[in-house]
Image (tube, rainbow over all chains, first blue to last red; front, top):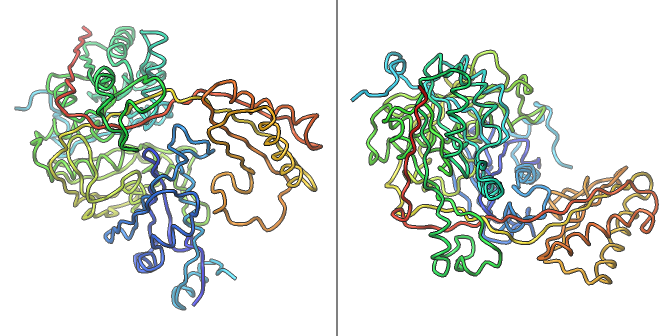
Length: 121
Length: 460
């Protein structure tokens, strides 16, 4: 078992609606979707984002495209138009979710290392 | 009835709808290229973000002849000769806060370019400011549940998200160009499908699938390589020369997203998935004015280089209410940044933060919220940022504060300006800005409260 950043198995894009951010997290290969389902949970995202998210977090599953959609309420500093953030739309939140560490089995780890990806120490 | 439908599309068995813009200031030359080489039946320019129309309204209040998209003239001049030559019709929200003025301006441009005869339609009636002001006591704000009247500031604009139906009407009447104000982004793309294929506006599954396809291109280049590249992970060829996307739609709702050969960018399953999830919440229940869309059974299939097939979208009956974006003045934001570099820069920046906080206290500056960022370390993700292993070589300290009064926002900026000479040693010069907050809230109003109309102009 080895740990990698989520970035090594998934990509992401974040959008905004009012004060809510949504983040699509998509497995690069279908066989890694199970890792997302198991480890990229609402609880994990809540811990990872900490004080950035003041409201509810909901996760939606999209198995046909091997993706999860997270909705983070009260997460954009009061909304795009009144936020004091340099990133009022939270478009960089995609990059933040990809810094979540995930644990993968030996087969996946071997594949990632063969691609030149570094496990976490 | 085949009146005012594309013979070209009927001949080849599919309809081609191009995405020429996805925000007010979008690039123009890729849209012109798409108009010239995309063999389009329709070219759509979506140019209204949540706040754009409120800003346009402010502009219109200053000068009643303005309030439409500032790049409209440049855009139309770049694409109109191609559109005219190929019979491509234009659908756009460039009318913003003043679709009538936009239509008259467009007619003038068509006359000057000698591109008549051409019919131009303006969709008028998304402005529901009077209704919202009159019902402010009872309209709940979607974000808070409190009535609209609980907001402190002056309400500047209220625009309902219209659907496809009024655009369809304009197309049925032969409009070559339809200019709208606030219309749901995807509806601009759905309208040509409904018109050309004669889709019933209560065939919810067909409309749902049409919306899924529309959603794929409504952010323009975001599905053809934009906002996707991550070197070593997600490669995008020739990113500086991104081609804008188009849809090929079949009458049964099956769609393909593609781009003009030879342009930069990429269209594959990965970017289409990113775009499909972009700004949706519950994928089984995405509310638009035309249909409630269900994305959960959508299949995306790579059909060839830069070609992805879209199928499986579903839908349920449209809502009885329309969403309204309300723009309201809500105080001021003061911002200021200053950079420290070299050994000890972080300690000097931290000391500068303490100095500014002390000065704000002494000056009795009233801020509703103050945010302090260390750019290079935590400005976007705060405490959730990964720790920096070493002290950075330089750090940019940023203050942003929201205040009810302009003078308090200005004082924050002023206290950062005086750091040079009176704060810690060896900084850059600061940069400061003070701006008014135009906040956007949403309310729902009954569909019947909105009565859109068409203005038709004919250029001989």
